[in-house]
Length: 375
Image 1 (cartoon, rainbow, N blue to C red):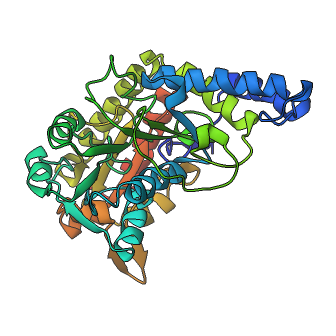
Image 2: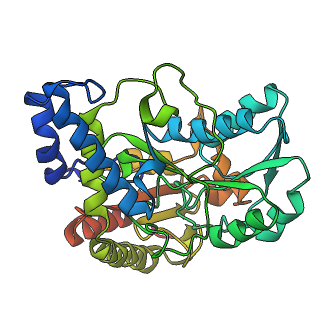
């Protein structure tokens, strides 16, 4: 049976154009970009071209882009870097109940270092009320960190409104945009994000494999990794021209969002097929409209998502809920959204990509209908 990949929110296949751009740096362009001789010049030029491509996608200046090892490092750098740089001004951080572990983990660490963290709730579709953020701000607040789109259910957050609140109170704003870059959000002039001080991105979600952090010019940030003066003194370590070129090329491709409109059509077709087959025995998790165009998180009511997925041989998708010896533990995201256990235990996240086809969607829908007995 043909394999079908519907886990693009976890990782994406590398685009052939990205592979082609990276190949010379595997074969002959081996120079250290920071060196001063002939072997370094090509790598250095490629690094800056890649930085320009990332900046163009985010509507930023080249000097505002820091290359990192991935999204987790970018998020850690933003949270810890601000906390340490501004600890003389305050010790309070605001985040939400459905953030990625790359946010929750650093926040827990900072709590152990004496910082205070307020976690604002979400509603039953994963949205945040900006007024809750405003009410959480204190004179000691130094940073708000709210992801742009949730990786599990795809719900998009009102970052523009939160940005205005943060700016009015003189508080820095960070957003984890690993899932929305190249899908729904790019370019300050093309996406209603408002003014953000930090944006973390991850190449795994845009057909490449390295991360980047946008840091608005003149924003205080203490380096997470100390050493030589790489990345403008904000992230020490020999740069990888190979990975930077891959990310840059992927970002250049991601500026064209037309393919994502086609993905949205496929996602909606998939959801329609499931509703026709299951009726009220299938439930949508996440916001019906303010959602990533590629993400469909659904619950098969009365089923266990992990078991159902295991029976879909050759289909790659994911479920955030864990099953242990007959007991199903809902994912933190579904719990925070107050999804009923009998619904949430049947959750599966299908995340589509630019390579997904009509035939694949129809095949999975048909197989699911055959696996679940009629009511």
